[in-house]
Length: 168
Image (tube, rainbow, N blue to C red; front, side, top):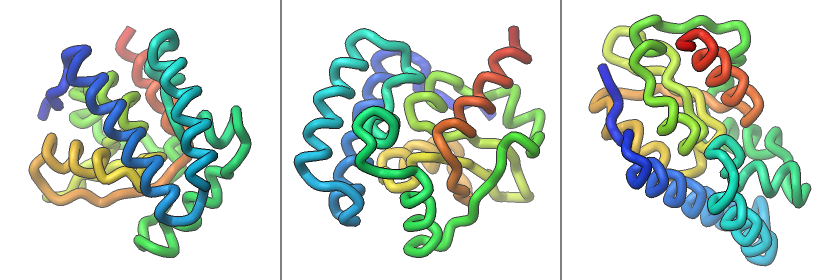
């Protein structure tokens, strides 16, 4: 099952929308302020014009550059409010079929990784669960039920790096 959105324009659109809606959700949840979001968006726009996709993350800017939020606080919020579980991708192999057909640019743009299939369900780990654009993107791509898991940016990056290395 191949995932579309492989042109640079499509990936950029997903990246921009994912980050924009993540920021709005973080403000709505009172996890950051509007001023913090504006500062993060300014830095993100600089990154988008010059950095690789893996560095173009509003969450990364807010958590690691501006240090106004902690990823673990977001994960706790997602568990409490949305009852999603967490997954450690470093110890989870997942499905060869899913892994071999991944659209890596879309994964980087959405900070999400489809990693397994259980009957009619796709299992997706994401650091961007709070972005409705991310959830809608993957739901449209797979057209089936999704079980969402939260994880960190680092866990997604490490897993995507392992997949890229295996493909090389």
